[in-house]
Length: 239
Image (cartoon, rainbow, N blue to C red; front, side, top):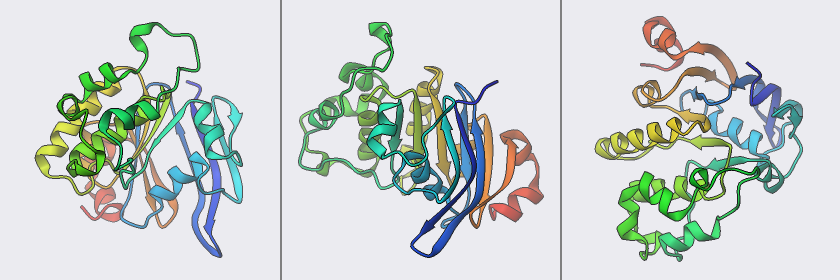
């Protein structure tokens, strides 16, 4: 199957410090691929490189067969890629409804009305946000802010979603709730590249996994094989 996203041999630096060393991965249509790794392994830098927030010095990044490496983030977004950062950046002085409205963008292709993301549809996916529509974003809990960050990105009608550490810092009950909501999102057919440390969370959502260690991909295969191989888990994930 032709990949939606193909990352080939990217080398990314912060100043003179190299963070990614020849990272390569592929994401197929409609699947959830999880990039697993410890803190500082290069997960966030990989997503930022794809989104154009950090420019790789070499390698290629192709989305639907077209090169996007070197493009600014707003042009990458316009091609259909949505990005939810790990630090849940929302507009704290805007209401929940205003956070959603400001991100509104029509889909790139002609699709039926029922497939488009609207406030009503994101409230159906995240019903906890519906009664908070007139609350300021800065007054929400961490879990509510995470849901709002994802919902706001969906209002841009992306065809591909980069989702960075969605479970980080959340209470177990909130993580379970978020997992169920992301499962429903997966059922819509949206292609997702997920960055995670939580192996259990990733296992229950993902089709495949890549493990990144010190800026290099050390495993690329099925999630089931990774979970079943204790040697791999202990070597790469300290679990």
